[in-house]
Amino acid sequence: MKIVAIIARTLLGLMFLVFGLNPFLKFLPLPPLEGVWGQFLGSLVVSHYVWFVGAVQVISGVLFLIGRYVPLAIALSGAVVANIIVYHLTMQHSGAQPAVLATICWVILFWHYRASFAPLWVQKS
Image: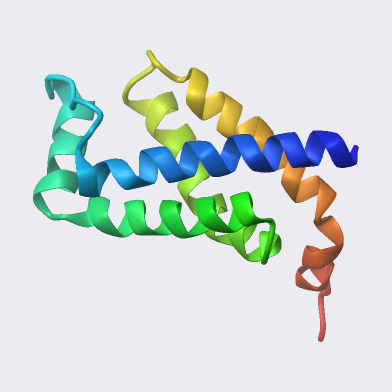
């Protein structure tokens, strides 16, 4: 299980680092924005909200890759992964393979580090 967690951490770290740097460096081409998903992405770009999401992705990606503060990286990336999945389920059904891979890697890491999140499930502190 430890090797699976290392592979998942590395894959997720690389994905988050590369896709997180894109809003700043613009090395991946933006497809033609059409339909509901195009309007959604267009509003994120115009409002510069993608910079915040990109920064969260870069921070968590670096933390995953260096293997430090991994529970923090899991917590930071959880909201991003959830939004990516919901985006692909509701707006753009094509191209969801990286989102599914990111979700699988995130679940593996969450399960591997579940002891770090155990205090969150206590009803009364």
